[in-house]
Amino acid sequence: MATITEPRRATRRTFQTKLLIDGQWRESLSGRTFETYDPATEELIANVSEGDASDIDLAVKAARKAFDSGPWRKMDARDRGRLMNRLADLIEQNIDELAELETLDNGKPISESRNGDLPLVVDCFRYYAGWADKIHGQTIPVRGKYFCYTKREPIGVAGQIIPWNFPMLMVAWKWGPALAAGCTVVLKPAEQTPLTALRLGELALEAGYPAGVVNIVPGFGETAGAALVAHPGVDKIAFTGEGRTAQIIMKSAADTMKRITFELGGKSPNIVFDDADLDAAIEGAVLGLYLNQGQCCCAGSRLFVQDTVYDKFVDRLAAKVKERKLGDPFDTATEQGPQVDKAQFDKILSYIEKGKAQGARCVAGGERYGDKGFFISPTIFADVKDDMAIACDEIFGPVLSVIKFSDIEEVIQRANTTDFGLAAAVWTRDIGKAHAVADRVRAGTVWVNCYDVFDAAAPFGGFKRSGIGRELGEKALDNYTELKTVTVALD
Ligand code: ADP
Image (cartoon, rainbow, N blue to C red; front, side, top):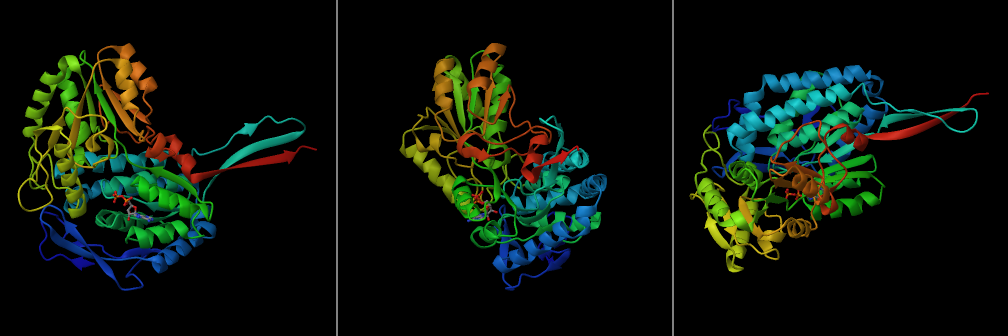
């Protein structure tokens, strides 16, 4: 445990910073550590043990042993569900502390981590706890005197690599279906935000998970992450992050024929027709883009507004966005905190410069906020053209591109002119128009007159370059199970 000399408002004064392998907390074999920073102050929070290939090897062997011969395989499905509920209870009992730790490491406003992320984490574990004893096969009427049935068995050891934008929620999305299905896991949290995953590891041990069922190895992508993907003892990789990283992972996973699921980026269209409830659409546009400092894979970053209401809409939207309260993420009134790190901060500012240089009209923000911490003023570009960099690339920051359109055929075609396909939204009071857009937009999630509505029961994932497979819901259990067909001669 590292003791923090200058704790901010976090109730805890110490943080778990070691690797969790085979039920034990241990330093990395190399003895190396890496630093994690508070993005609001740019101050060091903690030095975290840095796992690499040799630590991954130990973790995979522990997960393998727990899967192949440990008590986990013999545990009744119902007891697996009880363990998961116990973990959910422990998270709930420590909810304020976990929310503060998330805010400290990631920078997201405390109101979001406490009232958004954490309740979704608890709900996700409870939802999958309910599935643990409901994963079963079918009987199949085959030709001849045979009895044929299918079974769904856990896939084995799951390697899970997650990003920094929703550090704890991504653990829940990954552990939930994996543990319900009976897999064991090796988790590699993002190097920017390892602390809440490690705290969840402590709670998992407290809940009573047997040694080796959950292993956590913080470290960097090119070392720890790549070693996890390449390891022959891993059966499946679940990854959330950038498309470029996914391509590297896909190539490497091919060598061992690992199963893969990906949840990647987006450039999601948010379409506002002139017959919409415009007040609600403005709220939805703000939530859809600025939630989590714009660091959402499903951010509604291309806002299509019908020409008949365009000027009025842009004016009102800009006024609304200028009211957003930036600052100390521990202040409960804060709506927008800092970006997660300097690299993201610099990348976003460079896109703002590109937007200006390419002739888009900046109607809000457009610069850094303050002189300490990685804060960026919420930014809106109006009159954005489809081929501008800010309309094509995922910026992953508080930069909204507003684009004018005139009719439904045109906007559907332009909404689909992207390699991404994660999410979309449509705002209209015309139910036929809403369904037509929902039907024809090529995206894994479509919200009608709402945005960013998530539920553990509703599948989430991308068409095209936004992903492979689906997370959440019953569907995610497929990611962690193999189907076995058994045929028995009857005489
Ligand atoms: P982001 O821009 O959101 O950080 P990344 O795809 O770079 O997106 O990172 C998401 C996760 O993938 C992080 O945990 C990171 O350490 C990991 N990662 C990065 N590169 C690799 C790699 N080559 N192999 C495996 N994991 C990686």
